[in-house]
Image 1 (cartoon, rainbow, N blue to C red):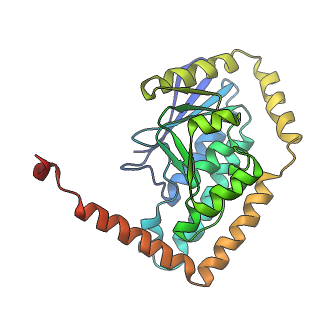
Image 2: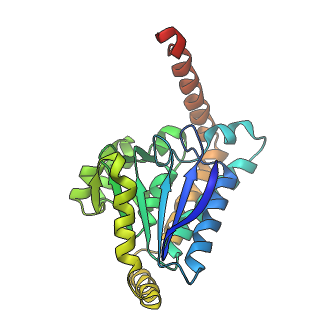
Length: 261
């Protein structure tokens, strides 16, 4: 459980996120992820990073329950700063980052994959920002890197999700494979990237970031300001509580494994 780094092949670092049951990342998890990505990128032996996750979904965003059960604004501020650090670490990683996405990728997950260099997805992957339904704002900056402007706005305003196939049509997902082939497909792309000269691949990453028309750090930080305002006005807390209550009610209404038999 947590964030781990492995080196399964020459020149490749695989960073795995594991926060069961749904990969809702706690405050410390975002900071740990940022540190892992920075560490891998600064390793001269690494030429490509693969970002992956265990379980049913790639990322469920921030741990809303942690925010609600932590007194004061400590968890809220920590989550916002942690997300900012993690998203930036992916974007600023000295080498290309390949995101291997399965199942759901929502909220903070969009911040990660939107800042990644390449995305490989399973055929059951879905992407979206349910932020307005959770009393938050943010990561429109990163969703805009995955889909055209008007689609981004529609998805953001409605909290709808899109499939990997739809993102593939827009050119943001490199390849779609069955879930059981996801790791192999991501590693195949990573090996192709890692075969390049270590210095040149770093120059390539830095030069592409340098011509990016949008400053993702400033843009996302601007969005976060509205999240803080929503919290100060009390609207965010109401939506987070409603979300937790709805999840609890849903689980209570589901028959247990023993009852289902």
